[in-house]
Structures are given as C-alpha cells and as structure tokens.
Image 1 (cartoon, one colour):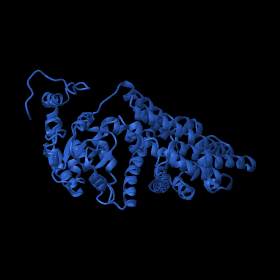
Image 2 (cartoon, one colour; image 1 turned 30 degrees about the horizontal axis):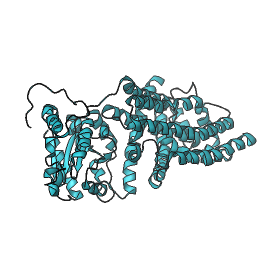
Image 3 (tube, each protein chain N blue to C red; image 1 turned 90 degrees about the horizontal axis):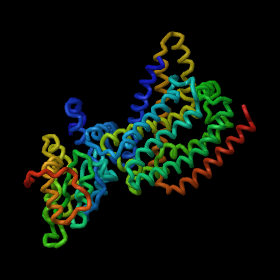
Image 4 (spheres, rainbow over the protein chains, first blue to last red; image 1 turned 180 degrees about the vertical axis):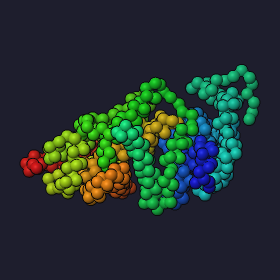
Length: 189
Length: 318
C-alpha cells in the first residue's frame, strides 16, 4: 500500500485518488450482496482501504455486480453503469456473473455479462468470502497503476457493439445512446 | 492586515473543517471497533472527485453550489476566530443568523435544477429542520443579546473574557443547555441526520452530485461544520478563552502580535475539537429520527428551555 508516498501523489494525483477512494454503489443484484455488509462493517472493515458504499451512482466509481444477473436486473445495471462518472470500474462478484454459475441453463439469466457492460475483473467463488473482496480491491489497485483497468474506455470506444447487444436483448431501449454511435463498424473488444 | 486575514481565514476554516471530517470517520470507526480510514481520507476523496468527469444539469446546478460555498465563506469572515475577525465592525449576530441560511439555499437552488425526487425530499426536510432549530436558536440569541446588551458577536466574546463563559453564568445556563440540545440539528448529525440520509433518500440533496460537484459539496460540508461549532464556541464557551488573557497582555506589550493571534487561534481550535468530539459521541450512539419526530423534539424541550432562559434573563437582567 503506497498511500503515504507523497511523491506518487504529486506525480499522478488523479490515479492515486481513484486507487484509495473506491466508492461502491449500493446495488444488490443477487445473493452476493449478503457478503457486503460484513465486509464494510466492524468485522472486516473495508473503509480502511478507502472502500465505502455510497447511495447514488453519481458519487461512485466502483460497481460490484453481486450475484446472478437476470435479464430484468441487467437493464438497471446498464442504467446505473451509464450514470456513473468516468473513470469507473466494474467487478463481477461470484461465479454467477462470470458464466451463469448454477443458473447455467436458466432461460432468464445473463451468462456473459461482459457482452453488455465492460468488466474489469472477476471474483470467483460461490460465495466469495469478504477477504476475496479485499484481494480484488488490491488487485484493482495494481490494474489502475498499470492503466489496465480501462473498461470505461472500452465502453466508449466500442459503444456500438455494446449498444447492439443490449438492443438485441431488449428491443428498443427506453433511453438514448450514451455516446454518439459512429458509422464505422464496432468491433468486439 | 484585514485583507490578508480575509484570504487566510477561509483557508484555515477549510483545513479545520476537513480535519474534523477525517477525524469523525476515524473516531466513528474506533467506536465501531474498526481500524478506520486514515485522517486524510476526505482529502483523498476530494482529489478523486476532482479527477472524475461530472455531469451537469444546467447553469443553476453549477452556480448553486458555488453560491452555497460563497455564503459559507462570508459567514466564516463574520465569526471571530480567536482574536481575528475581519468583518468585526459590521453586522453582528443578526447578519450571521441571516447568512447561515444561504448555504442550504444554494444547495436547494442547485438541486432543484437536477429535478431528482430524492433531492426534493431532502431539501424540504432541510428547511423543515431549519424551521425546527431556528426558533430555539432565536430565543437563545435574543437572551444573549439582552444579557450582554449588544448585537455584536465580537463584543459578546470580549464580555465573556471579563465575566466568565456564558454557559456557566447562571442566568444564561438554560439557554446554554438549549443550545447544546439543538447543536446536533444545526450540524445535521445523527439524531437529526434526516437531510442526507443515504439509506432512505439516497443521500438527499447530494444525490445528483458527482465529480467536481461532489468535491465542492464536501468543501461546503467542511465549512458548515466549522461554522456550526465555531458559533457555539464563540457564544457560550468564551471564544479563544479567558485563561490566555494575561499571556496575551504580556505578548502584546512585548510587541509579538502575530504569536497572540496564533495562540488564540489554537485555543479556539482546541475548544472546537472538544465540542466536536462530544457531538461525535452523540452521533455514534443515537439512531436517526424521522422528520416529524425531530420537529416534535425541537419544538418541545429546546424551545421550552430557551424560552425559560429568555424569561429569566429578562427578569434577572445584568
């Protein structure tokens, strides 16, 4: 943890700020949210890493997809993700967002979350323990350091691809595109 | 000299306010038996917010938050900080009472532009709460003005250095107790955290703030913390303090005026720290009231005490 190294703060204040002030959206998609209360309260205390839950997506920069993603929830997830200010990071929590998990043959569960929004990292397990959240956070720090947590840039660059996937699922979307969709064909990231 | 203090005093107020914000998170964590974030965490949050791309909802949305910070800075200039008070010659308590409503008004203007229902609920709660604590507050200030026969806050502070703190002088005791009872409501901490309740209304007026707006809102929060506590310390705990008077006289006669302002500022900050930590303990213990419960409480005991205090001051006099 290089939180107290002043030279790094002077060199890249924005990057260091994003590393040590990860504010998480309150958004429970599935059963995985049950691991979040112990990890933010007295037992595991996520606040010492600067990880704090906030109530609105506008104030947040980390989005934990906790648990399985149903088709209905995905709509809210996309809206919440688009409301967050850039730079923003997404972490899939549990095995369900990765490949459907135990809902692998469900007609109503999203098996490939990263076709709809970009995901910077995954935490495997069913359930992952609160320690796994901290491992993910420290791993996210190294990714931010190396500029590899660039999901939001991918979303902007390949917005046409993501929007097409979303529209394939929902038909006509209720809200206008976040970014102007260019004419050139969007490619898979 | 006044001009220099006009620039430096808001900076000092900001540093003290942001330190208190960080300290509050650390102390709350220790009360929960957690390790807690570092004291510098609010500064880290501000840097992070400034580095984020934010969404604006219109011109009034941008200007309202600036208006709110400007209102807070003006109040800071009217409050004596130790021996320093750049705008001591003008206004007094009435101006402070009037200007203290500018900060929530700016937030309300800004939030109204964003048209989020949570913000509307938060703003209406803020003004209902202000209605709740302004009535005992007016009684308290009236009894102070009657007792000291002045409306100038600087003269009230000076009078306390000769006559002892207001809160231990007998006619003002009830007013002091009443002020202590409404202090959490003025600062908006936990029994009265109805305005920015994150779990109920998505942090209320702050719901649409992201990026730079969130950073500015945090700065405004730091200022409002400073103002809430500094007003109490000035009115009831004797400003920078009467213990320091002989030291001050000695140093002033030796021609070391700047050390005097530093020492008085330090004493003032220490008193603020004590009041703030007491408020934090209240914040840690109590759950949140509903808005109508808060109003029922504020209009019952604090108002009763403040009114009784005013009657006593009017009868006893000076």
